[in-house]
Amino acid sequence: MLKNIAYTFLSKLWAMLLTFLLILLTTHYLGKEGRGEISNWTAAINLLTQIGLCFGGPALVYFASRYNNGHLLKNIFAYNISLSILSVGIIYIFYQQLNLSIYIPIIAFVNVSFLSFSILLTGHNKIGKVNKLNNICITLQAAFFASTCYYTEPTGIIYLICFAGSLLLTSIIGYSYLYREQTPALSNTVSLNNFLAKGVYSQLSNIFQLMNYRLSYFLIPFFLDESFLGIFSVAIALGEAVWLAGKSIAFINLGNVASGQIDKSSIKRSILLSFIITGMCCLVLYIIPNETYGYVFGKQFIDVKQQLIYLFPGIILCSLSFVPAAYFAGKGEFKYNNMVAILGFVLTALLNYVYIPKFELQGAALSFDVALGVSSIILLGVFYRKINIIQK
Image 1 (tube, rainbow, N blue to C red):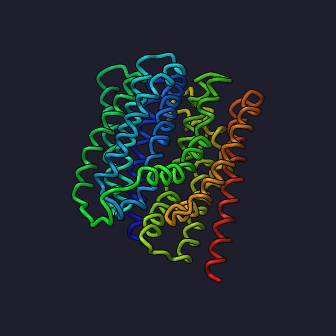
Image 2 (spheres, helix red, strand yellow):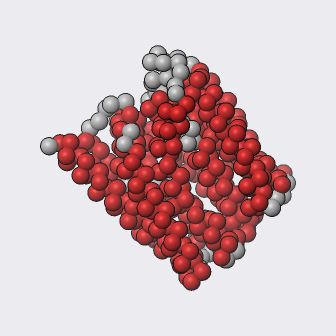
Image 3 (cartoon, helix red, strand yellow):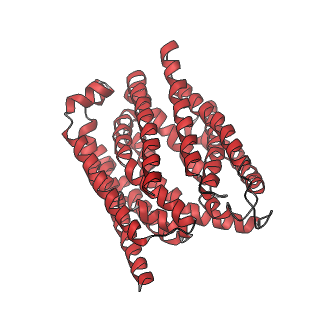
């Protein structure tokens, strides 16, 4: 297990470094408003992606060893093509831009395809191949966008095109990996109602959890403007980078639990390890001087550290929930993740609506801390209660 955690951690570290490179390129070449603009667009893509994963999504970890992969993918593609067509009009109403109303659903569809391949491979416990896919995708995206920055003046639309290109190429590779995984299936067909029911049930927590992280990306431009979102999105990106170790540990536990390899004492140690490493990373970010942030990201982003400090409580407390969430997902007990995700969303929506107009970015950070902190502590408590009952 330690070997898998180390490999996954290194894989995610590489992805984090390239993500950091993309942040640097967007802050220096696009500025606060440009950075805020693409953050808003990618939030819309991610939301549509999570809705797309309702037809399968995390439930594919459960279905992978039970049903034919090709049949599962046909259902996923059919559902998401329909979703993409239906979403064009809605996106146009929201953004009033024809190109975005086309780009966003297409990119979301390709992203769903890529993630479906990854999730199915996870269900077959092919963690190494999943890590390779993720690294290839982020490497291509960084290479494409860096090239445009070198040869021409980049724009937000170019950023989206680079993102789409990397997803498309990586999806082709992912399909080739999955094609070679010809594991015996208990059945070649799956009831569409069962597929969708389990998909929605398992994906519900991810949708609401995404909104916990990203609802402010839609409300900040509405109440303030996109330059504020530019600063906030960089602070959030750094905070999410701190979650690297915790999510790596949770990812390994997900694969082990899904395949029946459950060590409860190891899972408890994983939670503590995730919390300690996250806290240490936050301390490192706190020690870095304000001027360094301005030098690295550009003078417009000198306030990033102050915003990051406001986010630290939520970042640290959230690290307690990664492993319990992975445990419940691997066991197929999605109701607990759904419960706390919905609670977090309600808190996020209410607090953002009240605090952003009043306290601006500090209000968005406070909403983030309270919503994630409360939901993470509740999920941790439910996890320990379940574990203690099982042990008795």
